[in-house]
Length: 460
Image: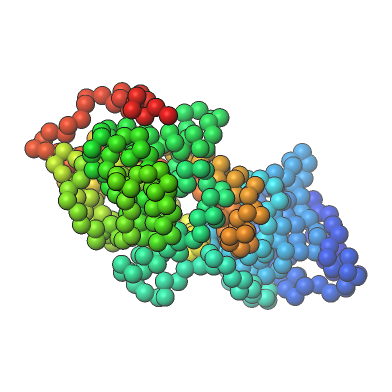
């Protein structure tokens, strides 16, 4: 008899059933190595889950389900006992993320439902004796095989400490990939930052266009102005600003592939006389003082040790009376960091740094800026990420043409997990309008009403 089909002691609040398993279909009588200690760990974990609203399927096909009247909102499918060792030997976002990314665990049902119960599992309170006992049991389970390769197989930085070279490598790890990969699931503008929704049913493309235009209006762009875009991506904002507001725009990126695509788009629109893109680190950039600076989704990539320098550099590059719009992700100051290593830092955004909005404002003021406006777009980013996740899943064949299965699973988890973080308020998105006052003169009107009026020069 397949030992995985033997009835087990029922964990509290869980119904069990045995489904057809690969081993039973093949007529095998062998249980996977580590199956019994893995099941023992899971029993103990599930005893601590007071009211599970999801089901758990084991490698054997056996499924633990909530007792009626509760129903499972999703099923966590553990494909190997090694998933249990990976997830619970060093509990944290990295281990759970690796189990999913490498296919040792899967989610059947809405991805957004999985994060709340996983949060509880990551913060279980265990005594030292319980930890020691569980650790001994976990060591009986084989280690997980994480040797699958992919474009996003993890960043190591060659062991180098903080440096301009490591910063470049970290940026290129995430961004320097064929534009077809991004085009498969971003919108037509190739905008990779929070959109701005006038209404819940607004399309992603329209919301991204609205965001690009909103930033132009916040900076009160006028024809002939000189503007600088820090971390310009594939050029969406500088193209919009030059095309509809008549400015002379320069974008900076560390990604050669991003720069190549942005330059091609500039040529296609005939904007070579008013738009250009340069490859380099903004912290090393020199130019004559400019009228406006936009930083849209770039400050998250500024290393912590350079955070204050970032604002000092921007302040020096602005002429007196100039303005800067900083659009960036922030973290909640009241939410504790999760235990363990970061999945996002290793597999998605290496060396990223998220400041609180308080730290952001303090650094800007310390550089000399006057803070004129701070606006939260947190809910807008949650909606943006859900659009991206839906588009990624719908475009799976096309995404796989230009990446690999590991990358697809990493991005599916990163997009859905990030949407959850914005929904619950662990992360925020703030636009901060800064002014380099000219002997106390800000040059700004007393009211913001012009931000919300579509300018005639921008009629499309």
